[in-house]
Length: 140
Image (cartoon, rainbow, N blue to C red; front, side, top):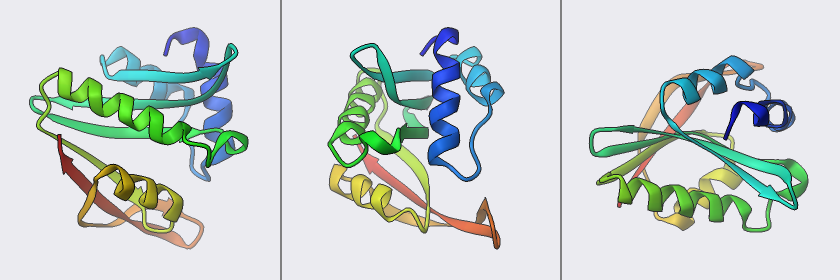
C-alpha cells in the first residue's frame, strides 16, 4: 500500500464497514511501519490489509475485500500472504479481533486455523451502542 492507493482503500473501507477507518488511520499505519498491503486485479484495488508486528507477535488490524469480490477466495489468499510474511518476520503467533456478528469473517479465520481465545466486551461501535469482539489467535 502506498499513499496513492489510499483513495481506493478508503472507498472500499466505507463500502464494507459501518464504522470505517479513515484515510488518517491508514496513513498512520503506513507511517508507523505496519505491513500495509493491497490486493489488486488488473490494476484495480479490490482489497487490502494492515498487519502490526510486535516482537514475536503479529496482530491483524484490518483486512477487507470489496463486496463485489468477496466469497471467491481473495480474502483467504490475502490472509495466507500475511501469515507467511509474519512467519518470515519471526512471529510465533498471530492475533485478531472480529465483530461477533461477522460470521463470514469468523468462518474464514477458523478455516485458516484461528481459534477463539476470548471476548472483548463492547469493543466495536454499533447501531445499538457497542458490539463485542471475538479475540482469535493461532500459532504460526
